[in-house]
Image 1 (cartoon, rainbow, N blue to C red):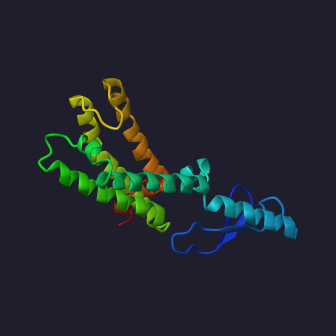
Image 2 (image 1 turned 180 degrees about the vertical axis):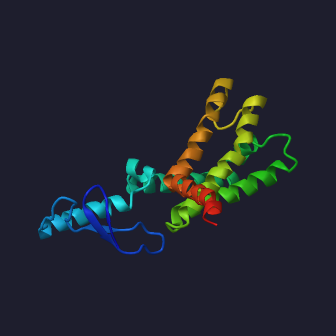
Length: 206
């Protein structure tokens, strides 16, 4: 199939598995026909390949290696916190369980510790295809436990060195950072965006 894109005539084959259509410029324009050298042809092919499969916005801003460090670091942080739930930091974490939770504080603390260890291990060990789902789940967990941070501030409970209203208030702003950290380090931003786009386009294609 041949068509014109801003002058040059382009020939392309069918796309497969939803991949962007790749085109090869053969050098023929509306006004003239140019004979392309092998170097020109190869340069045009590379330019088309580079623009046909754009990287995600997250990947453009942060190299993959940086995200890997962030993901492994968050996994280690969660795993350490989970172990602390079950061992030396039991009283500290119990202080963050709101009084209105209709479950024994010790049960909540143990359950959340097990979840944190599981999420931490998953962040470190998950395959690339599973990382966005793990990141989204981790972000949801951080949102779910946020009421505990609010309760610590409202009730004026001392824990983790947060012994003043100011320090407990400032701690509240760290929770959105954890949510963003989980979504960024696993590239869940792009995964969620693409998922919502597919849902929006689905009814139109039927």
